[in-house]
Image (cartoon, one colour):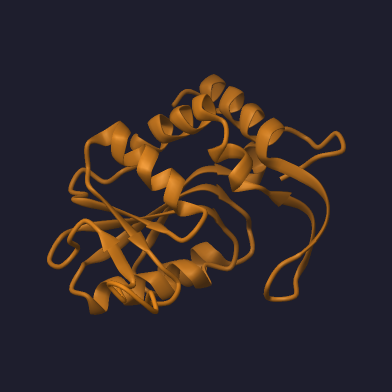
Length: 181
């Protein structure tokens, strides 16, 4: 993407999905802004455009895209439609009834899987899903996200051989005017 295209997309993402306020994360960390992936997913044109832009970040040898519950699911579905690659869906915990699976959708064993999520902060969720996929026999070395927040995620993933490919970083977002990243 060109710098201008990135700036335009970043402005659209910020306007739609970045919310100002006081937000407490599940690890207790408090942020003054929040990336609301559901607002992005609810805008069909923005979701389409984000998926098209993310498609350019995919490694050439990707065979399956795996979206992390819940924010990564609409993204991986849109990215799958944009690229023609099959999608898998990752639950945080195995389903307690029915199939009792933690990995749904496309077969991952022996296939080059790329993780897809909405925002990366600490990287803990991506790392947990990487481990699950690797145990299932899927080589995972790359992850895509819409937004990378500089809270250590990239470094953690690097330690475990996963390269993070963010579509946007906080620095790409326009300066806040009541709403930020």
